[in-house]
Length: 493
Ligand code: HEC
Ligand code: HEC
Image 1 (cartoon, rainbow, N blue to C red):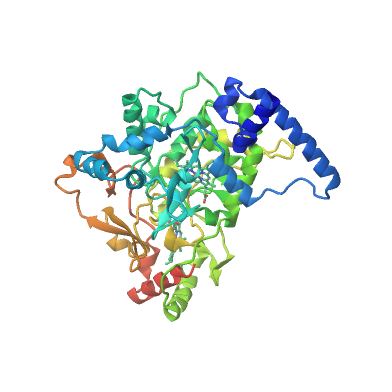
Image 2: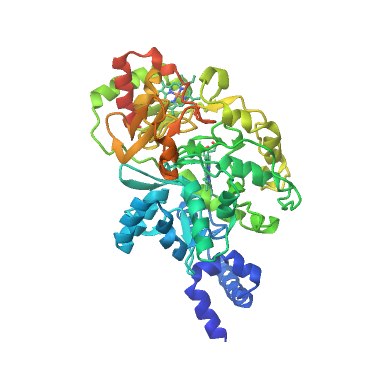
């Protein structure tokens, strides 16, 4: 008995170190976990007594491993559901999928919903999901924070392809066909909740608002509370490689850059207060990974003399807000928030996240210092505008602005020529304009309503709530020559 237990636990090493929620809840294998746990504690005590090392520093590698291997949430779907998603696609697509090999079909499925493969284009796993040995797929942070640009996958880049809405809807349909139980995402989509408003435009901020409102200060779930009334809008996830340069988080800079704050994502009702607090250590590691992510270098040729001219223009016109850079290092970053009426970009995100939402965060365990003092890190209750972010790796993080409204850096530098409506035509990188390859429109095409939902959702439309493409008119003060030079300089960051 003891032996089987050991073999089973060791077989599932990951499971043991990070026990699965459902098994834990069901009380299965508890004795087994307990016995192994005591063995580990004894071994650890021995190790510590002979080792000069004190408490382990959070390690980036460990943080990344936790993200990839530890299931914090309930499963979104299993392999069977994933492999059947193509059966609910529109006719033409479905036929193509039916004729494809199972590997090609997996690839088509990933591309359809913007699920990213592992770096190295390895489609055996989804970067944004923890695959459990049971075949279950559990969403992790990298679903939104692991993206692809110019044919390469980068953990830490915002996932501009992720069509969470279509994925959750289709998962729900397939689960019903197969007689499987729906879980949180597909249930929400099924009830008409807005999970995303286009590729890469997830309603993550609203998930945070809703889930935060359902907890007390000690993180206890309030089963009778109701989420607040609020409008739906999606947002572009920022790249992690700039987080290390900031003292505060989010596009309005309202929250401290603190490991507990990023735990908002795990506030699923099934994760009780004890579970949340118990997992704090893992988020120290995850934060260490986030702080360690480096921006990828621009992989195409750079006209160095032109970039050098651009640097001068940048330092004279942009650096006061975005900071100065030397040999692709941040020299001085001011972390400035620019008021809404000055920056002129879409106001929805700042206006709709209200002081009462910030107040919740300000008073909760999520911002309480972990030094026992009972003090809290500061939360800005009434942010006035948007942060001018650091621009490292900016070539890679299209689309631009907090609402992902600008498809390329060229368009960012030409406010008067920004398209009101655009959609990506391929995943190719536009090396002229630096960003997504897009088709632009003055109005929605006449056949828009007859397009299938995936195609409709690919149109970025200025008239939709939270999607204004205006603002940030500073580049208009520059000549065309100067803009060309700044564009070249931005490649070097
Ligand atoms: C469903 C998509 C989604 C998931 C899942 C998600 N995020 Fe985010 N994340 C976002 C979006 C969108 C923003 C931008 C929010 C804003 O600025 O208001 C964001 C912002 C952030 C930021 C702030 C970055 C900055 O530059 O200020 C951090 C840090 C972060 N997320 C960490 C995490 C971690 C850690 C997890 C998992 C525990 C996670 N996120 C899960 C979508 C997501
Ligand atoms: C007065 C301050 C200010 C000046 C000057 C300024 N910016 Fe910005 N910039 C901002 C703010 C604020 C944002 C974020 C706006 C938003 O997301 O709504 C931003 C966003 C950007 C972005 C998009 C960042 C991203 O991650 O999506 C780029 C690129 C950029 N600015 C480049 C420039 C360049 C180049 C110049 C000089 C020609 C410049 N900016 C001048 C404040 C400024």
